[in-house]
Length: 116
Image: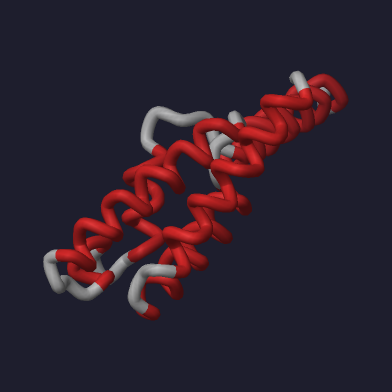
């Protein structure tokens, strides 16, 4: 990654955050929670996550311009809204589920081998 790419990325993120701060308070609150949710379980590819956040701000600005409350835009279940956004993206939750299944399968094979 080139230094110019990093600088441009930072500029884009600052511009994005300025747009977030211009939103009504309820939108800012929900945006912050969505961002935390995506960082915890979100897509493995960082560009997928920032792309989602940039798209959410477009959606939120449109909703605010129409005079809608944020939950009219996302629905009352904000986590389900996030999960819908993540469909088709590999998430950290997916990786963890896979590792749990692999560990269980390995343990079961070992236990079966010992009982013979």
